[in-house]
Image 1: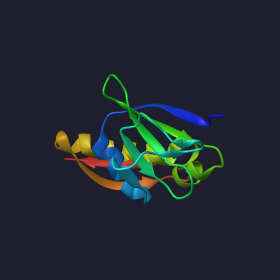
Image 2: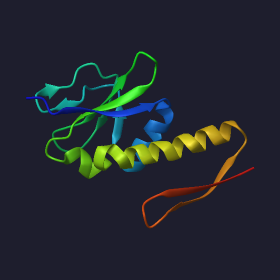
Image 3: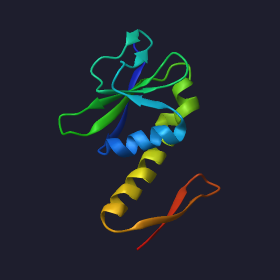
Length: 125
């Protein structure tokens, strides 16, 4: 029985994904295959290594974007990256916005987390 689930998202900026992984204290690598219920997950270009028995695979799509593939059985991924990798995706978005803003001459000022866990970023020139 497979527990593999693909998170429906399209990640375009690997540098932002690496920064998000560093922020969350997990390792982003291309050196090992991601671990799942039945062994290793095939077809992933990168691995987000987690504590426990399961990792998240980063799978390259034909259009050049990436999706997240993981074995969510047991809750280990959710404990570290949030439900449906929400904490990881939020950190990715924050770093991606900062990188794109910098390309257009903007700087990031204050970054605040609201009571509802939304992130507010202040950008200025």
